[in-house]
Structure formats: structure tokens, C-alpha cells
Image (cartoon, rainbow, N blue to C red; front, side, top):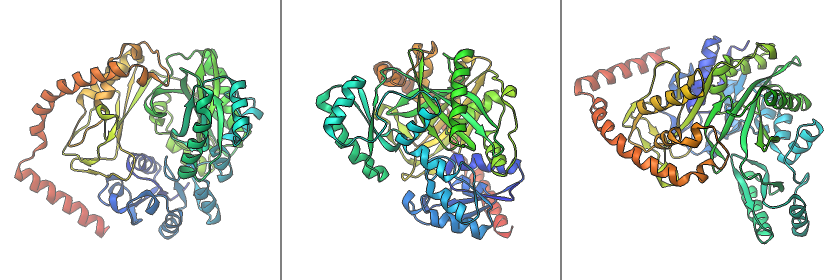
Length: 493
């Protein structure tokens, strides 16, 4: 087992990995930008090192700085979390060069799955169904028009190196196709440094269902069942749940087997996620995420498997904790991503200072967060404040528990997506499990009207609780003294 691990990330995922390290008696090393010098994760770690700069390109994307800090701190492994360098093969290559273990798959596998065209080819060879579309990059307009006619409109133009919903455009008729290809190529070149695009059949109302896989370095591969991630906005996930409301034992067996087959075919190791689109009884490979997912906690809740600890154990050469037969589903879990965004203003980011913070609790409630009272949310990074996860004996109880937890969650100083999540939990179609990836747009008017009512309802409660966030001078002085004591002792240690 490792003695020390560097976490090449920030915020809640950095703390999540550090918690796993503590339970495994491993020292954690944090790296932080100038904007994150007062962050919780930098203080939570056993040791912290500055990267300098504030923008991602100046800090969390600097492979050279990260490798240098890892070597100087004596870290034997690097956990990339999600985002930033998590799916960048360069980090893996540099780790391999310097004798540092990347907690993830080999760089060659990351590179293969990061190229969507190559990934589609590999999945076809693995006998995993893929969405009808091109098997090569598209450059010629006439050829693109012919392909789209064969597939049938609507189609979607995608960046081969894309991800996170960037570099995608839906086309409903031939007149739009050439412009869509040109604009997508421009976005792809700017965002990913690769202008290659391809065309797929556009599924009108698919469900987004993904399977968590674990693979050790001894040839053992299992899946931890599925997550439904259909509540999205512009291809960005907002709410996830496990298991999927439409899943049957037969469908789970087919999709799970396909996910394991995909991982086995490419020689995958560590934790990964095979994402599918499900439509009219059929499922199709979408992509594979070669990292831990934002929504991994709901799988942990229903299976009892600590995915991050498994990642670390696998990277250390240990065998999987469980066999496929030992993986059982217990109850139902839902995750809401709480972001510093205004959902009534087209989800505009709202960075700023948190002037009041009260997180929910009670049975079946988990909050993965990296913020605290008076924390300044930077404008340079993703707007996520926390992930709110609840568990219930069944889906109905999980929804009611999420309603209760959202009602308890108070964040002052910045606007958040809490009203949006409350509105979704009240939505009849959501409660019936009638989900698809265009759910938010399809129910937009109803969701916005409900959010407006919720904002009004919440004003009275916020007014009642606001005084609890205004400590007396005596309390403030004591808090400051305790903070100074902790800081001085950390320096001594």
C-alpha cells in the first residue's frame, strides 16, 4: 500500500479522496492555486503545496508543477479526481516516466477512450452496440450529406475529442448540416486542439444510463450496477439516481455484461464508467469515462462499496474487494448537484462569498462539500458547491427524503440551484420516473413556474434563520482565536 498520495484536484473531490486516504492510513498531499489558498481541502490535507496562479492553465493543468511537487513531497501516487487532468493521457505518461503511480487506467487506455471515433471502433469490436453513425472523421460536405441521409435526420455532430457536452450540435435538416460541421469543428479546435468531428443518429428522447465498472490488475472485472443520469441541461448532468427506474433484471444483466465486455476488451484497470443511451428497448454505447464520476456516491450508497478506496487498492496492486455475485442493490439513492448558479437566469454562475451555511443531516443524508461559512467561491472553476446524496428504502422514500434535505439546506450570499432541485422533486413526471435527456427543456415552463413559487416560499424561512448566521462579537472572537490556534499548531507540526 502507498504511504503518501498527491491529489491533483480541488474542492469536494479532493476532500473525498483525502477521506479515503485517512481510512487507509495514507498521508494526503494537496496542491492549491492562489485562488484556493483559503480552501477547505488545502487545510484538510496532511500537507499542502502552492501551485501559483489562479486560472486552470496556470495551476491545476500544469503537469510539470504537479509532478515536481509529487517528487519533492515523496508522494508515490497521484489521484486526479475528475475534470482538469483526470482524462488527459499526458499526466499518465509523465507519471510513468517518473515512476509515480497514476490512480487510474494506463495512459494509452485514457487516450483511446478520449478519442470518440476510436472508442466507437473499439466498442464495435467488443460487440457492444453503438449509435448508428460514422466510423471515421467527417471533413467533406458532400460525404457528410450522404451519410446523414443514410442515417436519417435528426443527426448530431460531435467533436471526436469532446466531453462535458462541449462540441455537440443537433441537426434536423440538410440545410443546417454544413454550418453545423463548420461551427463544431471550430469549437473542437479551440476547446480540445482537435477539429475532428463525426456524425451520429440523434435519439429524440433517450435515457442516459451508465454502469460503474471496477477492474484490478489481476484480470478481475465487475460492475456495480447502473445509475440514471437523464436529468441534464445542455448535456451537463444535474440529478442522478441509482438504480434506474426503468431497469429490469434482464436489462441490467445485458447492459452490465456489455460494460464489463467493453472494459475487458481495452485492458481497462481501476474505476471507470461505461455510459449508454437507452431508447425504445435498445441501448447504445455513448462513451467511457476513464476516471471516478461526480455521481459515484449514489453507487456507494446502494452497494456499500467505497469506490475511491477501491481505486487506491487497485493501483497498489491489490485484488478487487468483491466478486460480481457479492454485489447487491440495497434501496435507492438520489444525488443533486448544488451549484452556485441562478436557475431562473439560465443557470448563470454566481461566484461570491457564502455569508450563511447550514447543511442538512439526519438518516440517509450525505453531503460531499468543499465549502464553509464565509468561503469565497472563485470565478475560475466549476461552480459546484456540494453534492447532496440521500438514500431511501425505495425510490418514493428517497424522493421524500431529498425534499426534506433540500428544505434544510440553507446557503446565503450566493444564488444556488436548490430551487431547481426542489422543483424537480415536485414534478409529477419525475415522480413517475418518466425521464429522458431533454426532460428539463420539455418541462421548462412548469419547472420555472414552480421555482418562482419556491423562491417566495423560502424567503420567510431564510429570514427566520438569518439571525443564526450572525454571531455575537464574543462568539466571533472565540472562533478567530480557535482558528489562529489551529493554524499555529499546524505550522509547528
